[in-house]
Structure formats: C-alpha cells, structure tokens
Length: 288
Length: 288
Image (cartoon, rainbow over all chains, first blue to last red):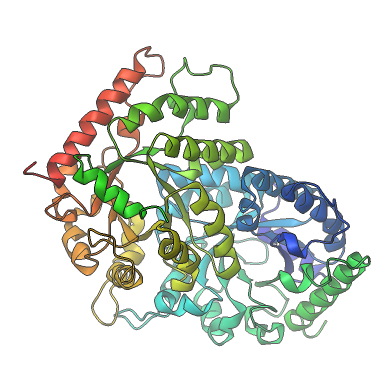
C-alpha cells in the first residue's frame, strides 16, 4: 500500500512544511466575481478550487473540504466535491474529507467505501460506538487511510454532552479520547502516530493538553482558528517536539480573505495561506 | 405553512394507517434483475423506486431513504436520492431523510437548507449539542419540518457511549432524551406531539419505556426490526393509546423480500409491506 496518510503528513512536516490545512467551505457570495461568472453554482465552486488548489499546494500539505457546503448545491455540488478531492490529490495535497458521518453496519460500509475512495482521511461521529466506525478503521489498517473522530468540538453548545461528567469522573470527551487511543493502538506509523486521530476545536485550548495526554498517538485535527475565535498561539500542547500531532485548519480566514470584486484575489489567498502556514509552523516547531 | 410533519403522521394513523415506514437502502445485488437491466447503477436504483413507491404508498404513510446507500454511487447516487425523495412526496408519502448529519454553525445551516428541502424530516446526531441542530429546529418551528435525534441506536457498539452513566446517575442516552424533550417543548401539534423526535433502536426494547417517559412528546423513529433482530411485538411501550408516538421502520425485510430473478417481485413487496403495516398497526392500536 501507499504510505499511510499520517506518515505522509509527518514527512511533509519533517521536510519543513506546516502541520496545517486549508478548509474548503464553498459559499457563493464569497467567490471571486471573475471566476466563471454566470456558470451554474457548482461549476463556479469547482472553477474556484481549480484556480486556488495549486496556490494552496505551494504552502500547505493538506486541504479539508467540508462536504456540507458542496451538498448544499445538491447532486451537482456532490459532483464538485468529487472533482475537488480528485484535483487536490493530483496536486499532491492530502485530502481530509470533512464529512462527519456516523451510522451502523452496512450503512457505515457504504459511507466508508465512497468517502475513503474520494479522500485520504475523513471525520466521523463517535456517538454510535466502535462498530459504526469499524468499516473506516478497516481501511485505515489495510490501506493507510485516516480518520478523525469528533472528540471536543469548537462550538458553544458542545459542552452540553462532551463536558458531561461520568460516574467515574471523566468527561464524555475524555471517554471518547481514550477510545480513539485504543482504536489506533495497532496502527502506528514510522513516527509513532496512529491512523486514528481526533477532532479537538481550537476554542477548547484549555482541554488540549489533557486530551493530548489521553490519546498520545493521535493526530488532532484542530478547526476553529480565526472566524470562530481560536488562536494558533494557544495550540502548542497539540504538538510533540517535532511539529507532529496537530493539524490546524483555517477556512474563511484564508479562503475568504479578499473582496469578491478584487482582481488580485489570488495574491491575497497566496499571502494568507503562506502567513497561516508560517504561524502554525512557528508554534508547532518553535526551534526551527 | 403546511400541517407539520408530525401532524400529518398523526392524521394518517388516525385514519387507520400504520405508524410505520419502509426503509430505502438501495443495494445493487438486491434489485430485481428485470428493472432497467444494463442501466448505470444509480439509474437502476431510481427505476426500482419508481416502481415500488406507488406500492408502498398503498400501505404505509412514510418512507425512510438512507442517503448513505445513495451516496455510495457518488453524485449520480445523490441525484437518485433527490429524485426518490421528490417522487415519494408526489405519491403522498412522508419522507424521513436518514442522513444522520451533525455539524456546527454555518455548516449545519448548509445541511439544513438542502436536506429539509428534499425531505419532510431528517435524522441528526446529538454529539455537538443544540446549536448544531438549531438550523434544523428553526425549520421545524417555521415550516413544520421534523427531526429525529439519535438517542439510543440499534447496533451492538452503541452501549459504549450511550449507556455510559453520568455522575448524576442517568445514562448519556437519557440525557439526550431529556434534551430532545426540551428542544421540542414549544412545537406541539394537535395531538400533543412535538416536531422533535428521537431515534431509538428496536433492539433496545428494554429501554423503550424509560426513554418514552423521558420524552413523552417525542415521536420515536424505531429502526432495527427484522434483519437486525428487533421484534415489532416488543414495541408497544412506544405508543400512546391512539397508536401515535412510534414510527417503526423496516428496510431489508420489506424491500429485499424477493429473489432478484423473481418476475413477481412486485407482488412480494406488496405482500411484505402490507403484512408489516398490519403487524405494526396491531401493536400500536391493539383495540382497533
């Protein structure tokens, strides 16, 4: 098989890259006016990514397309998601499909088949337990794919369930974190990280160190930087000394950093992505 | 606005219908060989539902298409899902989109927009808390749409998280059930049921009475009958005296009840659906 997803991520960071990804959350009003004006919405979305993926690939190892924003355009949007994932991988980018699926048995198999064909890794819900994630885990073991289980999310309402304390004194998020650790114990890459990662929001920086300790082998996918209020400089506890262990995502801050009417929008994206990469790199590998 | 989804469900049962739905989980090897042979997979799927939806509509008030099995065919499958939902509604069927989505803020809004346009109600994950479900709840309030929050699922691994006991002695599933009850308290229909329902697996029959008590206003969507081992006769606690409160789903047992080579597959489906409807009706309204 190809090198595991996590190992390719590790190599990119070892080679001087930033452990960071650009979130692709297409919103029509934020697209550059000059890109495929008048084309159907989903065509405009793909045309935009056709132009920016090479820009992103010069500065970051990965992208995180959020399928919800593609599904919002119906089946044409789903097709744009497929094409965007494919093109990103052709540009050498790792693709984390932000699908947040979670279902049982044969349903989970159906999701795992299509979504891990499209992407190198995907995000998953934990509420249904291990068997619901098993078809995805099987592809991690067999083909080096990756998963990120939702552990502690960045939104205000997340505390209700995720911070709920169990009779043993742990929070629900900590229980899920320990499950993530167990599920990944037979899948270590050459850096000691497993193919089973976790989502921990950047707005939960105070919990980052304890969640990191509960799942030392897991890559943490960290959304919520920028528009949601999370700060890159608070994320140091996610990383080991080598800059591995945290994959920081930014969406609007890098992909909507220009006015739609701006003819120089490509330069704005390039600058925003480069700045974001440097910021994350500085926190992840402070002595480099 | 139209009558709320739950009210239309209530009326169907009041008129003598069964509180039950057929699960649409398209699997190619299970399709009748004679339906659109040689057509692309997603076309065959839609052709099948084009033939069976009128049959279902004669015996049941609702269908539950599981989008995973459509997504498995990529964007063409997503298009088949869109067409199947539309056609089902044209046949007067209520459509519960089994999408099991759960994401935050603007992402949840994107999902709510497209999926509650396609369906009358959808299934949702609870792990991210109320704000993740709010864009869906807003459409319940405003347009009478419905949601079913995953509370206690039918799969073996569900116990890990859902039966976890909190420091206050409740299980996580009970905590979610109480949230479902609160979220729906301002949305009662003429029968006293709210637009915020819950998913409780038929294999969890021992928890049915206590979960019903924790959320007395909620319709319970009950999958897991048949292939997964749940039994209709164990589901009595879901129903009030009028046959309302439980929406029992069966997928494989009714939609894959024939050999693909059987030329009389339509008759087999008609008989299976009618039998299933009568079974559920007998448990839901024992004195009718």
